[in-house]
Each structure stands twice: as structure tokens, then as C-alpha cells.
Length: 255
Image (tube, rainbow, N blue to C red; front, side, top):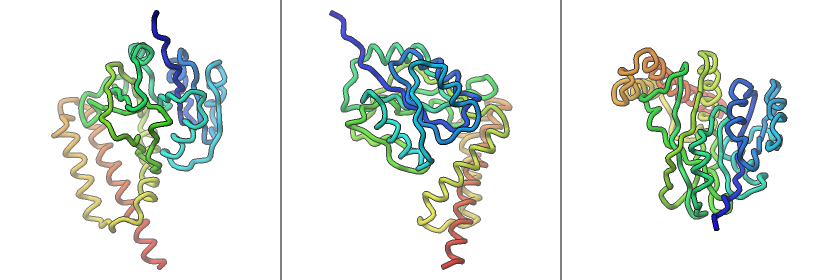
């Protein structure tokens, strides 16, 4: 007698995700439930979601990415959760693997992402290999409630899966800038009470981020894409620490 696959709820956070969401939902249409937690989209995100019979939509204000992940999991029908971003696609090989794997609720499961830029897989700059831990049982595990760069809390080593997530994080220069700005502000709010950051520290962190991506992580072998991603890594780091520096300075001035 064959073992029946455990039902899994796919949980996705969305905000004006029309550029990528359709591919994400298409890739998840074979899962028993897709729970979409939306933060007030004003584009066609919700109308796209309503095309799929397995998609359930809930609404929430922004409370930090970690807390949103946990809220989405708590609303899901099934306790096994696959957390996705709205710009990620589940490969069919990964779907089949999840269905066939005898999942152990004490463990978190991870998978690699193939990160694409302008239609090509970026195999460097820290974008490869890119392991993310996304499949878990909500009664045993939860996300650390950070504003940004949230991560699953777990004691045991994660179990790696062979299938891939396909990820297209940026489709244009404007997308780079928009996400960079959002994440910098959230990072600064998260760490504003930590050790004071200087202009020199922000500059050094930014230069190191570029050097690591371009040289240590072999971005120089990737041509134009390697140069673009390395610059993005550097500018993202600069924006985070410069924003943090400004917030800390304003707090000091108004004390």
C-alpha cells in the first residue's frame, strides 16, 4: 500500500506583485492550498490570485516580514508549510520531491534557488549556491520575527532537498532600487538601538560587499551580470548602513 503524501499549505506574502505572481501561482497549482497574505496591493495581484481555485487570500498590514510569515502559517489549513516569495517558482522536480518525501516534523527542509537576472542563471556573486530553508511544520518551528531578512528558528541541521526554486528577484533597474530602498529602511529600524555606525564604517562595509561579490564570489567571471550584481550588493550594503547612520544621528539630536 503506497503512502499518501502529506497535505502542504504554500504561504506567500504579497504587495503589488503582479509582475511575478502569475508564474509563482502556476507553479503551486498542484498543492492542496496556497495561502496568500496580502499587504494592501493596488495592482492586479488579487485578481490574479482569484484565478486559482486553490488560492485563499487574507489581508494584513505590514508588521515585519518574520511576523507576517508566522501569521500566514497560522492561517493555513495544513500544518506543513512551504513558505514562498511572490517572485519564486516551484520546479516540478521540487514539487514531486516534496510529495514523495516522508517528512519528519522535527526537521526543517531546505532547497536551493536558481537566481536569474535578465533571463540567465547567475552562478556567482553570492547568488549561487543559494540555500533557503522554507518547508517546515508550524507546530515545531516558526520564523524569527525580524523586520527584514527573516529566518526559520530550528535546533537540528536542515534536511536538503534536490529540487530547485527558480527565483527572479529583479526585472529592471527600478526593481533593484525599490527593493533596496525598502530593505534599507527596515534594516535601519531593526538595528537603530545597536552600536552607532559611522560614515567610514558604512563605506568600508560597502566596499567589502563589492569586493566579496566581484572577486571572492567570482562575479568577474560572469560578465555584465556579475558587474551589475556586485554593484547592487555594494549599494544595498551602503544604503542599509547609511540609513542606519542617519536614524541614529536623528535620535541623538532629539535626545
